[in-house]
Length: 188
Image (cartoon, rainbow, N blue to C red; front, side, top):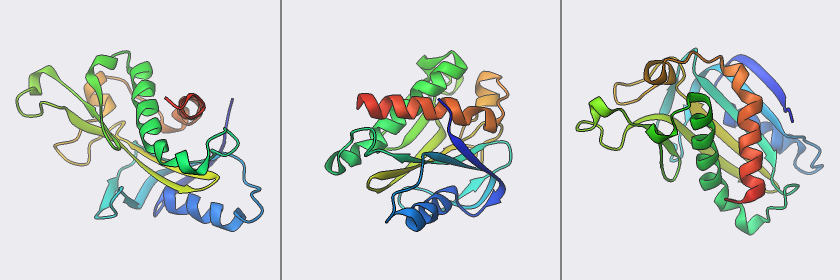
C-alpha cells in the first residue's frame, strides 16, 4: 500500500496546503489519499493555533489527506481520529526505534520520549512529535510533526539523539500511512 506524495522543499504549512486541496475538490469528492511533505515549514501550527511551530530541515513535516468515509468511519465518529492517529504514531515510532517502552502518548495529540537520566526533570518525557487533525468529512487532514534529527527547543527530544537512528523523512511517509490506515480501520 503506497500513497501519492507531494514533496516540497518549503511550505508555510502542510496542513494548510492539504486543506486547500480538499477545498478545491470537496464538491466533487475526487481526491485520493495523499501525503504533503515539506522539508521545512515556515508557519506550521498546533492544535490551538496559539503559536507557529519551528519546523527544521531534517525533521518530518507531513500532512495526510485520508478519505475516512471510504474506510467506514461515519461523520459523528470522526472526532476519534486524533486519538487513533496519536496511538498509530506511537506504535509506528515503537516499530522503527525498537524501544516502545520509552515512547508515550500525551493525549490528545503529543508523543513523548522518556530517558532514565532525565526522570526527575522530565518525568513524563520530552515531546518528540505532535499531531494536528482537521476534519472535512469525508476527509481527514492529519498533520504530523516529528523531530527526527533535531529538537526545536531544549524541552523537546529527537529520534537521532534518543535512539541513535538517522531517518530520512521521505522514507517514513508510506509506512506511517499504513499505520494510520490500519488504526482508522480498526478504530482502536
